[in-house]
Length: 421
Image (cartoon, rainbow, N blue to C red; front, side):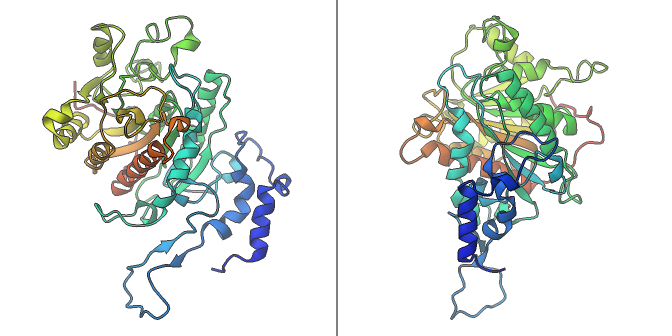
């Protein structure tokens, strides 16, 4: 593959300056994607996919062993997650693009109940992920970005920022488009899996609606400091149906939502779901937790890790979800503010980043069919971008769990049995 020439650099600079944008108008029937990435589609193969062996010097002998790896231009090209290729996922003109795992940004924060700013989360996570573009894990020996799975970044869903219901509907459509492609590695799975970057936690509802279409009901492994199963009449005040859908009620909505009238018990999530890291206060002394259990959740309190340790937390999660299909949702406020200050509703007394990553890695082998990391609001971050760095690591770990265990979709979307009655 040829190296970039001076002309190539001028062309890329011209595109950034907007001089060639008119040649890349939106495809018919596409989502109104505002990302400039679409204008760079013609350059991504030349500029984004450059590789070279970096361990092998000119005077070294090549012994035939693959001890080197292809290193991207880490700080050049598009700001995709970990420098994976960008793909046109939102238009019918991009249907030839196939992938196994897609990164999808959800820049939305109009349903937060405290500090805003999570709409900037996807950009900050991508920026912090650049060092994940190469290298093998010292713990697993794997690099999921250079394994069997074709991984792409679809960019951000083009969400309106003044109307939360319109934003959720647009995100529903984006998830539907991204997940509707045929996977690249059909011998492993025919349905692509999505890792979403938030965005406030309401965005997870669109992901659960999407996974239900392909996988049926799922067990949600929910890392958070808050339960997020509040009745909309309680959190939202019953003021309006509009106010009732927010980042603290979306799991209640997911449990109540009926997708098929002929099967009224087919809500989006199974009664084998679980919270981990909970420590925030509830609004009603008993009723909120009673409603939480009715929504199918068991709760691991944040302080249980001090008494029982990481292994016990992992064992509890694995026993709870069994062999069901699993959606992992990580609200970054599950971490203590010392490790993740940049979030909308921080709560003292949380887990460390090492504890969270160790727990996630302990879930290897489970049937993970989707995931997200949400509630990153970078305006509150440290100068060292502490929150964005750990969020990027969390997203990378979820991708690694997916690569480690391919999952085939069920033959019927109405399948999915919980190990918990």
